[in-house]
Image 1 (cartoon, rainbow, N blue to C red):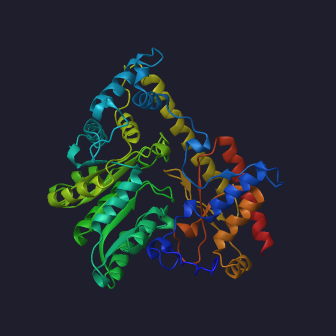
Image 2 (cartoon, one colour; image 1 turned 180 degrees about the vertical axis):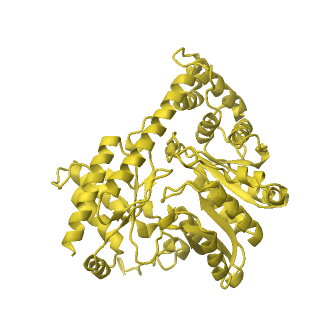
Image 3 (cartoon, rainbow, N blue to C red; image 1 turned 90 degrees about the horizontal axis):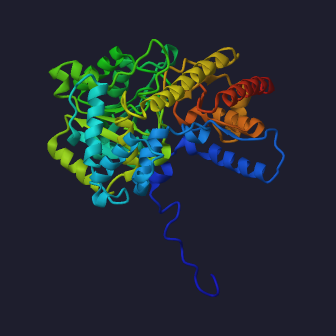
Length: 487
């Protein structure tokens, strides 16, 4: 009762809400990150801690970690947002030309107007040309390109399109373990069936076809696996799949009649000298018509990673291959419900896929800034591997690509017991204690999936070199102390 009136029950409660939303988890922004934010506020309020700052190594957000935006990318997007600056002689002519071309393709010549649901046509044309250059001339049709709100939006959209059936006929989606939690979250939200396949940690996190086959056959007992997701280069594992591996995956998908989803947002981030990025589309078409005319593929790219790191613009694209034309109409209808992806993000993607060329006024500066970012990331990948490699109780595969390290750590039985008593996973206990004692925020491996009895954490290699070196040293020292404390 409240003031003599029966108190109304809340319409929306934990019990009445969508239970699929309750089930989903997203580790990279989970409870440990919430605690990191609380610690930051406490430090600002003058609360004494054993550290002076919180170092967030939990998420691949390059600019938040201090990476400077590339000048040309920001010049063109600034001009698109404020066209009055087209008359300013501080901007190079090639940046103005690109901005004018994008604005002319916008409704009302304004980046504040809605675009076509599939994206601005000239930018889709530029994406198609970019894909053709990347893949050695293999044709790309702009009508197969969809501009998306980051790659995440495209991935969830394709998963929505694929989900059907009930009970044993419910769609199963094969995802790598460890995986990026977007996949498990989308599968939970949409009430599909998650089908795990394990990457081979002892072999640089390689993808094993025998493991894929075993996982698929086991899943067919309780669902209808229709989709195979690949992340290459890998997140959180940092591996770069070989061309042979990609060919094997394509053959497997063809044999087993699976729809392929290729998450290729880290395609610019390859550091190991003996590794190279091979797009699934390129390999598919080079395998000949037997595969290139039949295997259904959606591949994804983003402005958020690579050398760009423009996460906040939420720009991305997906290309669909061999999709049934009537289903493609349904895909276009589905994306039209949200009207369009953010036009500034589309413009950013347009500049990335159509950058300055040799001889253009901005080419030298653009190329110099791009190489500086990628070379710095390669140095930090090697440094991470080296420092972890010298630390007892920490096993770390080489960071061949992407932006992360996913080391396996020794956790003593007493710590495992304490974690269980607190209702935590052992690696979550380690990460919480690491944060509280050092201010370092990393994500427990359990948020990405790992083999039973193994423990990991994911950390980004994005902090500035000296800060990353300090972080790695503190982290390894803390692990040594942690193991002694619980031995």
